[in-house]
Image 1 (cartoon, helix red, strand yellow):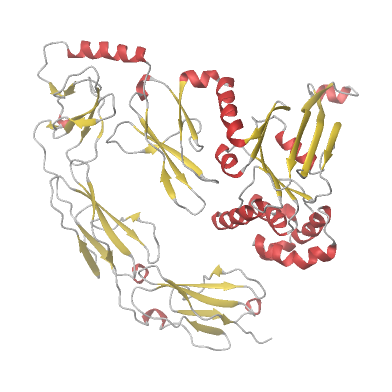
Image 2: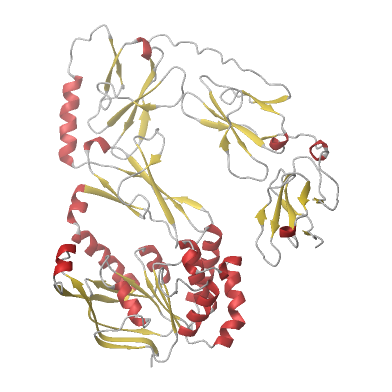
Length: 602
């Protein structure tokens, strides 16, 4: 016989609300008109012990109200909720804290409300504080917390003071990236404990699909379906599509079919196979489903989704191409025929032909200027037909044109490349080379090459565009300054066909001297001098400190904070502070110096 953790029978919850509100009427009338709003209507279901239940439905369906009733926050108007003696906790933003109390006092209050004794809470309170990473702010009033700090504390209480039943309302990870990873891993451990029952409210169908064994679907407060996840979700998605038919008929819906939970999404689009990807702004551009209005101007546009998980791993969805209804195709074919009809060509117009004429092909002409190698969509007459007509003007001299042709299967081919007039020779870039400079040079074969140098600091993984002399030429000129020691440089080279190549990576090595520390005072009653203990080429240094009795390190900003030697004034407010140096080599390897404690005589 199955053991149930939650039994809900004929649950009804209603609210009283003002039907209409007017300040004037409220001042001069004793009572405003009110109406009864039924948030939950006669809902019944049972959840077995150890089961993971997903609760789904459109906004305003009563999902959160139902969770709060199960948690004991709301009292039902009628019906029963039986938890069979199991303890329950609710994880939701904005629930459960007294704003005037400190974080520590709210831990005690929340723990007692969950059924724990004061002794049990005191035994685990430090674990909660450490998990929350709030440090000294734990003794500040909760009203002074940011939303991130508030969420961290709420999650930490639930994570450490584990209950038999956990209710999660749209919160599976909170805080910054580091805390999100930690909280997500902890939540998965809690969810998949075979003796723990979990109910999750979420609009993320992928999360529901991956985590939940059963799904409860509610709509406008009524129970629609309750059963296995793989049976309910497809029916729910069909229902939502039917509820919004205007979206289905006037929009193309593209979905990011990437497995995983707690994923972030960013859709991109491009106007053709060879164009650059840009951020999409259509509805759902940061969700798993993108809704793109179907318009003639978007014909042939391509869309893809960048999907990132909690660990920072990136994957891509398939590429979708916008197709127009058949009616739109016929209109365009007629326009094309009209464009291609024989006509007299003025002397000030250049005519370029794609070389292939086929009613099953779509055409997109592109161009780039004489000084650039980046292909852009052409806007001249016939830019989406087999024949392009370009006005001959001085500003277009040397521009190059080609046509991208796509067949019904998505196969792409290019026309030959045409040049308008004589290509002008680009003026040589005059570079002023500062003193004490080193150079990196890239030597690649090809015509019409474009260069863009990039750099990254020692120990970093992210590349940034360089802005120093020669950054868009084959030779980069780098000032030999101490702050650049260990920086790495590379060049991105693009040829006239759009092919991209990358040069080797160069590392800037500056001999290490003690000149930077010559003016620092020695150990004295006024200053303490701490040394990293590691010296070498291509090392970068960052000193950190933490207050006495705390665990969290902060970047130091006093003299020598980015060198091998740190000079700390001996002041009473620094007494007991600890200092260490983070040392990063050219390969990104990280090591730490010894921890130094500052002692100041009273």
